[in-house]
Length: 325
Image (cartoon, rainbow, N blue to C red):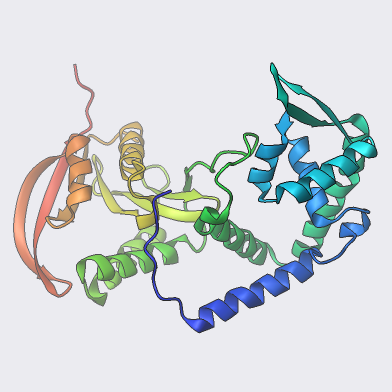
């Protein structure tokens, strides 16, 4: 991961992080000597869980992955071996390296711990409404994503890869997100005033009020439940579709997400029977214009206008959707 620029952190933000840490350690019982009434400490449970994810673990890699001092880890592993929870064998041809693996007894010891941890998580979420649960899970995913640089460099080979970006249809609440993010990002990046946000609000309001699933669609791109982008196809006429409101969050740029959204919109428009797709944009939106050109759109008209507090040049683009011979 590239180095992040260091900025001044407000004392109130530091205090908020410390409050959350105190709350979290109490909630999970991290300070208890006997985690979840298991007879194991939190660190011991973490070691057991990591061993269960690996066919062959090496102590040095295990320590790097979990961020545990080698001496402390050695004492834990000796105790596990003494109690028959792990087996040790030579790793390959190197006599100095030994692979660790849970025994059947070790797996039996871990099973109730995993069940208890699931019950604990279920107990946290059960009193919440579905919307509140989603908010909690998304907040946790955001913490993991933004603070992932705190994890040790040597990640476990069994740890799953970062979640893929998925495209889905719109749900309640998505239109508010589309309007809010357009307003924020275009004000921040281009200095456009609130009239642009008002225009976007009008577009999404008409989309919902007149929505026709046979020829119109909204896609929300998300990862770990966090929205990262959007694009719309609306009916311009019986044979012409219009592409609208392409947006990609700064954190997701460089992944090809904008092109993926545009291609999905084009595919849908073709399958819906449209013969042409049109769009309107402005000359300052270089990244979007590049995508449109790459996907075969042709500039048909340009006209200067003064909107959103700036002198701009509006551009009209068109794409032929008819099958080629």
